[in-house]
Length: 196
Image (cartoon, rainbow, N blue to C red):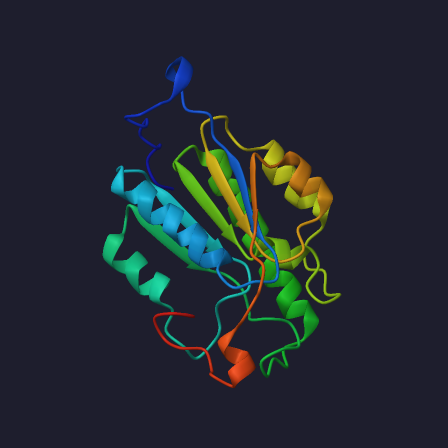
């Protein structure tokens, strides 16, 4: 496990940082991009950042954030623990394989949150894992338990569509991405450097 996180040089009012719970949700593109932008900003201040991806992984593409994580390690860690979107994009894996991957990602998230080793943790696609097109890989209660375990100074970002009201109520900052236009509507496929 990494060494404990260093204190922010700009702790905020009262001499200690107040870690926020941030949600990026909605049907528009940009949720992961916003979270990675926040991570980049945090890295610029010397913070220790962890990104856990609950769906990405086990795909035959190279993800830019993973490659950047290798370059910026150990300050930035990116863990792709998912097995892909369940039943989409050619997925034929048994549901139990997806459930096992989500349970492992949740366990790792719980351990890393409790470790005190990070200033910012991004739980990318975790909101999808609660209910993605009728597929439930983790329970809302498990996710709320992660929020309960968050140390006071840790910033936590969750991404994914359709954030449940209970998460919205617990968050300090909620941004909803609204799709107005998307390249897929023009049959333009996902592109390296923009989409992954």
